[in-house]
Image 1 (cartoon, rainbow, N blue to C red):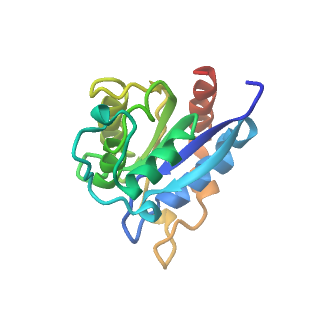
Image 2: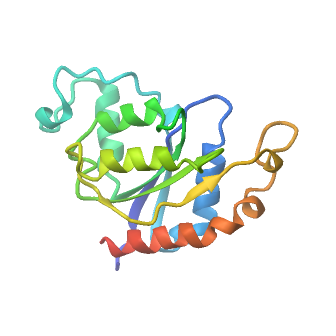
Length: 191
């Protein structure tokens, strides 16, 4: 890659008390992604997208959105070259806010490299990652260039401090550093 591409690291959880931002920042800090990419962390809680409200499905809009929030989201995602979805697992699936954000667009996701980093308590977000991979790997019409490495980050009570925050993500998640570096290497190879 001669010119640095831009990757969007998308925080999929919008809950008030969440760890997605911490995990996204840990990923950026420890995966080596910023050595090869310009990185933009996208927090869906700050995007505040309402439920999809266009008259037609994104595939039928031909890139013409009628709402300001749809136009803004289209411009943000359309400007990116690739994606890393950081997703929590809620009831063995990925968050509704992430599903909604993906469903807003179509061509802006297609044919771009993508990776999934999942996290959760008992399975490291495995089920959320698997479900999300089905949505963005062509089974639903959205065809990204999804990497095969899918890091799963396991949460445990002992990594949290008294205020409910992850005390030291770099130490707590060091055992996953090789996994996230592999995902970044595969992401680079997709260009």
